[in-house]
Length: 46
Image (cartoon, one colour):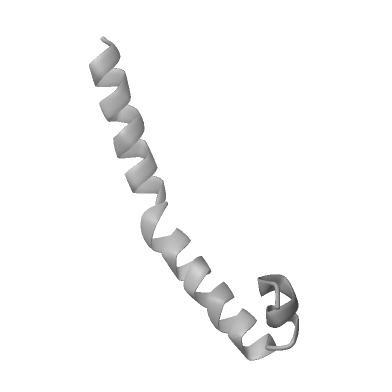
Protein backbone atom coordinates (compact mmCIF):
# COMPACT_ATOMS: atom_id res chain seq x y z
CA UNK A 1 0.00 0.00 0.00
CA UNK A 2 1.45 3.43 -0.91
CA UNK A 3 2.44 5.59 2.02
CA UNK A 4 -0.16 8.33 1.47
CA UNK A 5 -2.93 5.78 1.21
CA UNK A 6 -1.71 4.09 4.39
CA UNK A 7 -1.62 7.41 6.23
CA UNK A 8 -5.14 8.24 5.09
CA UNK A 9 -6.30 5.29 7.20
CA UNK A 10 -4.29 6.29 10.28
CA UNK A 11 -5.13 9.85 11.36
CA UNK A 12 -3.44 9.41 14.75
CA UNK A 13 -0.15 8.59 13.05
CA UNK A 14 -0.56 11.61 10.78
CA UNK A 15 -1.10 13.81 13.85
CA UNK A 16 2.03 12.41 15.51
CA UNK A 17 4.13 12.98 12.39
CA UNK A 18 2.80 16.53 12.08
CA UNK A 19 3.62 17.34 15.70
CA UNK A 20 7.15 15.97 15.34
CA UNK A 21 7.72 17.90 12.13
CA UNK A 22 6.52 21.14 13.70
CA UNK A 23 8.75 20.63 16.74
CA UNK A 24 11.75 19.97 14.51
CA UNK A 25 11.15 23.17 12.55
CA UNK A 26 10.78 25.20 15.75
CA UNK A 27 14.05 23.78 17.09
CA UNK A 28 16.07 24.15 13.89
CA UNK A 29 14.89 27.41 12.39
CA UNK A 30 14.80 30.03 15.11
CA UNK A 31 15.08 33.71 14.28
CA UNK A 32 18.34 33.96 16.23
CA UNK A 33 19.89 31.03 14.39
CA UNK A 34 18.93 32.53 11.03
CA UNK A 35 20.39 35.89 12.04
CA UNK A 36 23.61 34.24 13.21
CA UNK A 37 23.96 32.37 9.92
CA UNK A 38 23.26 35.50 7.90
CA UNK A 39 25.83 37.46 9.90
CA UNK A 40 28.40 34.69 9.39
CA UNK A 41 27.74 34.79 5.66
CA UNK A 42 28.22 38.56 5.55
CA UNK A 43 31.47 38.21 7.49
CA UNK A 44 32.79 35.69 4.96
CA UNK A 45 31.87 37.95 2.06
CA UNK A 46 33.66 41.05 3.36
